[in-house]
Length: 608
Ligand SMILES: Cc1cc2nc3c(=O)[nH]c(=O)nc-3n(C[C@H](O)[C@H](O)[C@H](O)COP(=O)(O)OP(=O)(O)OC[C@H]3O[C@@H](n4cnc5c(N)ncnc54)[C@H](O)[C@@H]3O)c2cc1C
Image 1: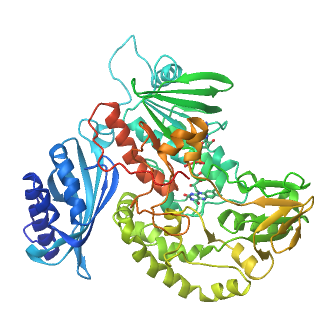
Image 2: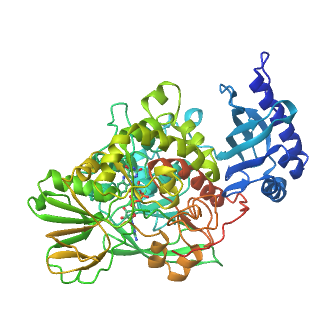
Image 3: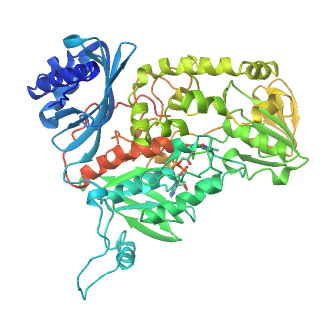
């Protein structure tokens, strides 16, 4: 039921009226009537609360079909406007933060209405589940006591309990969930599962949490600002740098894993995994500090990194090249290359960062641009692209990380580009001189297939851009030399392009990106399982490197896949933080036997 205030604003009255009609239709089990409360052009994005899936229903028919299939068991109700969040109208759209319940959990969401009075119709609706009834996290009023007052000869201290758990889990007791990969994705999910009481082990082949970042080239700092990067539960302190250096992030992840009491097995490599549908159990062989251990979790999560499986090209002559050559992920940094001739193949983030650091260290650097790249200046992106949600100003105006994440999530992917295009037009205008200089240098620049810029490129293909922190100027002014074209072959001491250009080289860096995460599944489970899972990432936008058909959500990320009990997790820090909640709740529900009928499991259209 909707709450009422004595002095209702028109926006509040409008939202209350709509929620009441919506509630009535849902309670009556009338899917069509509920769908009719949506506008002709409408979107309902659900993060597991109705669908046990991450899914956007586009149009009234899709909404009605989803409700037909789910209403009986979801039994939604108690639709209210979130306390302290006043609905507001602007430009013919009324926005409201809302809360609701289902048979098994509590949800929150965001509603955007168009029109007036009883004719108001929903344009966008976001529904998300944030906790399961009876399985709430032990936080705030539910926090653990810590001390056990009284007299007890069997007393076990916190440290003794932790030691016992660490000794037993994986040996005497099997985890419900095994997470392969203990980067930011693995630890964020692990932290949520720990709070939900789901026995979990995280394995990572590196000796220490954070090594994923430590091992990257030494000049690397995060490209995203601190407000966007928080992990769940523990925010960065107020004096944390805006762009954290990679080793600082690494130390944070290491401390986080310890403080959040994660069962983190370092120096442990997952070697193989098979699933037995009859027992509902995985058999995963891992090598822990050289010793084989067989784990039998019910659920298996790959948090092995979207930027983890290096795409190393196979150019003729690579085997004869006498200098140093490596993928960008293996680039140690510039120290050994002062005065050397360095060729960097690629023109995206890593390529620019590496070129910049090599140039700063006195190397003779050439960038080989093979296809066009989108560049956006860091300060412009911060101000125009992220500022309203993730900035000091946003924090000062009361924008919490959680609210920012939900606001971001509330824009359906089908129309997200429409909101992005004007932002990038504003950046183009603001940095007009910069782009003119860049293009003059011969650099091939683009704004994405439809002008929607960096974030859409990231969601669609996870590549094709550089957030400029200075190296673009080096290319524009010729300090870093630029050649355009495809690599034909390597000789003992040079890179030769298809047009015959020969670039002498002591070092070749292949900044050639990363493969789809289902490649990890092929390695560890089987090529058949990788095909059954299909391509990971992308929206099906039918733009460059994101083939259709339209999926409407990130393929295979954080939601059920075509491979039973197999999950993919990761993304940037923002995504890892936000979507780990929904993945953790899906795993928790399965762990305690709450039915999780999945609506609209995605089909596989691409295997790579
Ligand atoms: C150069 C660069 C800069 C980036 N900058 C940013 C940024 O500024 N902001 C941002 O949000 N994102 C950034 N990213 C993207 C992304 O956030 C990072 O790649 C991040 O490390 C991804 O975290 P993850 O936990 O998903 O995967 P990873 O950090 O890649 O961790 C995966 C882990 O899986 C482990 N693993 C793999 N296979 C196995 C196995 N068989 N057994 C055991 N362990 C295994 C690996 O050892 C690794 O530790 C950047 C990426 C790169 C490459």
